[in-house]
Amino acid sequence: MKTPAVFLDRDGTINEDVGYPSRIEEIRIYPHAYEAVRKIKEAGFRAVVVTNQSGIGRGYLTEEDLAAIHAYIAGAFEARGARIDAFYYCPHYELSSLAGYGGACECRKPEPGLGLRAAADLGLDLARSYMVGDKIEDIAFGRAIGAVPVLVRTGYGPASELRLRGTADAPAAVADDLLAAVDWILARGPRP
View 1 (cartoon, rainbow, N blue to C red):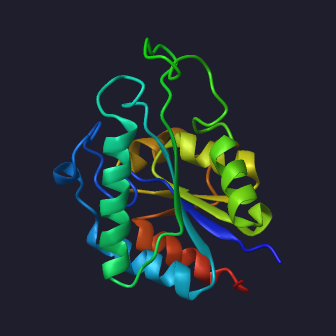
View 2 (spheres, rainbow, N blue to C red):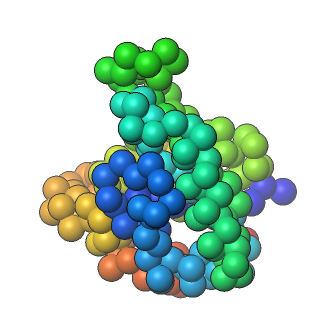
């Protein structure tokens, strides 16, 4: 049987958005994010990070740098009893001059590529899944994969909320932070 997931944006949702971090020292995880992921897992959802990382295509960091950052984040969550199941990222930047990183792609949010790949790899039920993020692209990505989109007011959330308010593209819910978003998700009804 397929399992639903809570897809999580990275920068601005689980950690502070500092631009294009290339070193572990630049990653500052929101303290509430650990409890949020722990609740996701305890409820039976998969916790899957989906993140646009055009800094790679722009030449600000390498895929190896990103792997080290994700290993650090995964370890920090694991140490607090909050396991992240997987990280999926888009390294592309449409105007990149680096071989293999330029042009249009299907994996840059709001395109559904990362979600579809995660669903295939992890056996996810997208129709029973959620997407939590701080940007308009995160909300559009959630809709593109058939998940319920939730906007957080951390990172770019306040600006995104203003732009989405009253539109057909508005999220299903707006929460102050990731923990509040997870509480909203868990209050909706049956769990996996």
